[in-house]
Image (cartoon, rainbow, N blue to C red; front, side, top):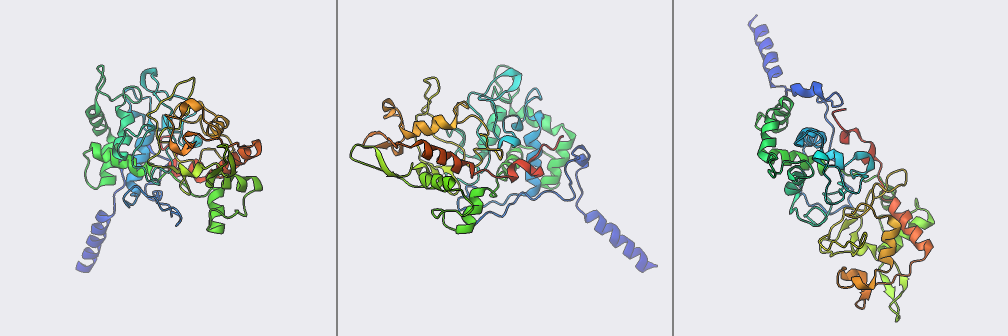
Length: 378
């Protein structure tokens, strides 16, 4: 009898040790809290850049970050979430040139694609690099007066008000306790950390380019899964141009890889302005761009208008790099010049078409379809 009682006691003890799931799991029917998604991909060996300091993505924190990412409670009027401007089906970008913010306000620049932030030499964020790191980046939209509104300006609540709001939201006290271990207090750092773990997980290396690179292990060799045009575009992208005595390109490529470094296709950390204008508007503070991966969606269309204007098409950009305007010489990065003049690549229509064909090979599949990136509220 004593043995039986001890056995029952042991069962009860072990049951009490079993990890408790958040009560709020019933609110998120799309999430199986007993088998949460794995947010840690097996990164290909050829992907060498990692600005996370080697910090492994925590699945619980990433899942909590996903919930925060899609929750409109993070805006002052409960109308805007991070996902309002970074939409999964279009590569976590926005189809609008300027995104909608609280109280019908507009963002000042186009919303960048969010994928592949982890794989870059550049630790700064936003078009003008104003955020020194991801800790700053993830809360900047929340504190922006136009975007999510917790600015503390013009009688709007400040960030402390958001902390109070979340601490008074039952499912968040439960979720933070679950993700951070017996600690129901929600802090700014925990909010930042959760969002960072989710955002750093947004990547996929299942594109046609990645499959080709795995087949050859040499980015400069023709990829057997590429068309002739795609392989031609790849070489144009990789090779630097060679100019003749008349300062026009006579051979080589377009030199795109000088700024958009493969195989991550992140922007060079020391790049300067590219001189791209819209309606004669030139913003010299813009010195960063997102990864060129997932520039196009799987259907072959651009995920959004390009550059910080959000209105410029790919043909316009290729033509700009083909031969920038002379009056921009003092504004653009030296990589876009030759002999102190804007470069003249003399790209043929066939070469321009090949470049576009290559850029489409950088499109992934998983980012657009994996449920672990989807809205948990619907």
